[in-house]
Structures are given as C-alpha cells and as structure tokens.
Length: 333
Image (cartoon, rainbow, N blue to C red; front, side):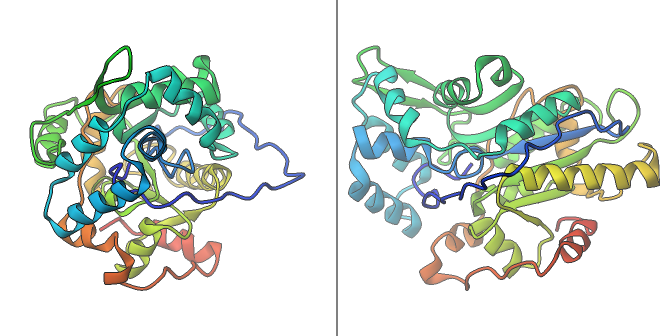
C-alpha cells in the first residue's frame, strides 16, 4: 500500500444496520479471477505503521516533518522509513495490543475473503509495510484459518525481543526499498501468461492511494476506495475504475463482471475487461498466489499528487452504476 510515511488519514466507514450478509457461495463461472489488494487504508481504515510510530516512536509531529522532507525530495522514502522504524521502542506484542484497539477492518472484508476462498480466487496483499505486523493483524481480525489463505508480499523485519530495535528488511537495495523495474523483470521470469486450464485470468486490483497506481494500472478491473487519493487521481486523469465504500460493493461488482464474462466468453480467450498491461500480474500468478513481489513506487507526478495543496481538485463522483460499468469496459491506461 501507500508508503507508511505518507498514507492518507483514516477514513470512517459508517455501519449499515440491518444489511444482510452477502452470499459467499461459489458463482459457478469458468474464468479464473485473481485479486490483489493494498492493506493500510484499504482492508484496514487506519495505517499500521502510523499506529506504531504515533504511539511508540517519533510521534505524529515528527512523522509529518519526515513526510514533508520526502515530498520535497530532501530525503528518500527509504531514509524516512528507516528513521521511523528506528524510532520505535516497544516489544512486538505490546505494539500489537494497541493495534488491536486502534485498527478497524472494513466491515465486509471477511465476507469478501470467504467469497474468494469459496470461488478459488487467490487473494494477495501487497504492502510497503512489515510482513510480520500485517500477518499478526490479519490473524487476529479474521482468524488464522482464513488468514492462511492470504499471501502477504511486504518487507520483512528484524525486531529485538525487548522492542528496542526495529529494522525493515527491504526487498531491494535501492533508495526506494522496492525497485519497480526489477520487480517487473522478476514477473517476466515466472510462469507463462495463461493459467493451468488454458484460460486467461481476470486481474482485479483494490486500493486507496496514489502510490497504488503503478500496480493498479496493470489490472483488468480497478477498485478505488471512494473519496481518497486513488479515486481522485483516476478522475483527474480519466483512468477507468469502480469506486467502493466497502468490500461488499467489490463483491457485487466482481459477481456481475464474472457472470457477464461467462455469458460472452464461457471462460475462454480474453476476459471481456481485458487489459494487456495486466499480463505482468498473470505471469506472477499462474498458480494460486503471488510467489514473489515488490511493492511498486509512484512516479514523480504521482508522488506530487499525494499533496492536495499543490495538485488537483477533489474527486467527482461516478454518476451511476452504468457509468462505472462503462469505465471498467475500457482497458486501464
């Protein structure tokens, strides 16, 4: 997801009393679907890193200064993140106790994940955070039995037993910590584009921030959390996407798209919403989940967009479901 130092602020998801639980049964459609999702701000409303830094590290004021230094180009993402993690002084379990109460999971994520499991849809989390933290959070909020079905691709970590030292183990030795070109080359060395049964998978990406864009642009279908930076950028740059408030919205749209595709293609050849750029994802997911991935970093233009006082206007709403459906029909630029 978005780098820990510049993630958008928490977004409150209002409860919807009386709403019936979504049907998680198998759709019976033929085409394989693969889901990739951001973590902080997408599956969870808050940022796991921010929760730790604000409670056990440098605090929100220093974190804001570091974000500005990264915005201005004075320091790199990796330099800022290293300082943030070095500021932590808390045993892992004690930090997790605070996250248990500070974090809110999307109210419909667990149901959506159950839907994915029942439909053999690989669900892969992509994050610039720390894998041990994300796994522990998922284990707690959705249970280990369901969490084990989710592949988490993030940075590793070295954490002292007494919590006196936290260190990110970066996936790539670059100023970003993640090398986009290297990641793409890794995909190209993986399995062939087509899935095992000869059909081409439909690639879905779910995110909330502009730093998700390098990954989001490679999807056949893009879901952007309503009202946040990814949606704003998509509107500003005419990128096709579907807005969502909770994962129940995503599930309904995925079912619609899958059934339309099944009627038109019977699961053969290209998906009805095919985006050629999504081939990179298909190579990375020819089996059940991502085996190797590095979170991608935004371009200078995308990075600048993260600060609204210097770039663009608030997002406009997609007028209706038909408009959103029409947007999905076009390949992501």
